[in-house]
Length: 76
Image 1 (spheres, rainbow, N blue to C red):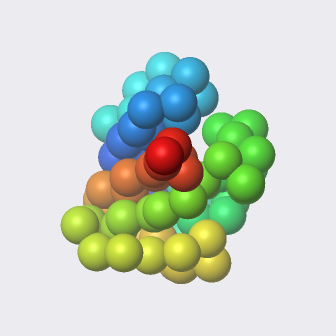
Image 2 (image 1 turned 45 degrees about the vertical axis):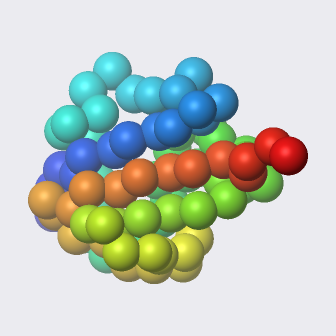
């Protein structure tokens, strides 16, 4: 079943932003890792993930309506 999520990519990850980040389609049972792959983001470029304002990780499950924020490693 198709659902949509909101995606926010910060800093250097913005170059991977999809055409409609407010309505990004995902399949039921998807995980953060699946979204990263679909956006063609190398996993090493994602340092922090927030799901609805709470810290998640690459294996966290997502659901329709979730707001996902991806942050790259921060420089010194």
